[in-house]
Length: 111
Length: 114
Image (cartoon, rainbow over all chains, first blue to last red; front, side, top):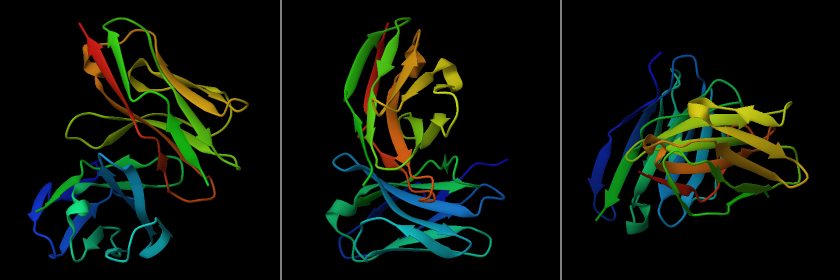
C-alpha cells in the first residue's frame, strides 16, 4: 500500500498570504489528522477529519481550517499567514484509534 | 487534561551500549501510549504502542517499552544501539475515547556515537 502523501513538500509564502496544503491518506483510511511541528512548541494537534466531518479540534486560531473530501483526501488552509506559522505540517491517516500513519510533512516558511 | 513529559531533551550514547528514553504522562483516564521516531526531514514512524494487556511492549528495530501505571511512565529501551538509531524520539498519549488526537512530549534527541 502506498503511504500517506503530502503536497507540496516545501512552500515559501509571505506574511498576509494564505496557503493550502494537501494530504492523501492510505487507501481505506477515513480519518485524517493534522499536526503542526515547530522548534518552540513541538508537535501540536490541529484537527481531525473523519468521513468529511471535523471530529476533533486543537487550540489554534480560526485562521487554521481544514476539510475532507469524499475520497478521504484532506486539505488544510491557513489564512493571513504570520511569521509564527512557519512550521512542518504533518498529516496522519488512520483506520481506527489504534495507530496513525504519518506523511513526510510540508515545510512552510513564512517570510 | 492529558500531558506528556519526556525527561531528557538529549541522550548521548556510544554504539552498542544500552539506552533508556524516559516518558511520564498525566491523565485522569485510561490512555493509549505510543513511541514515534523521526529521522531528519521525515515524518513520524511508529516504534511501538500500548493499548492494553501486557505491560511490556515490543516494537520495531529492537525497541521495547514498559507501561507502568502506578508510576505513570512508559520508558523506551534498547539493549544495544546502532549509529542508525540517531534520531528524535517522541512519546505520545491519546484518550481511547478521544478519537485520533495525540498529545506529544517535547521529544528526546538520541545521538549515538561510534
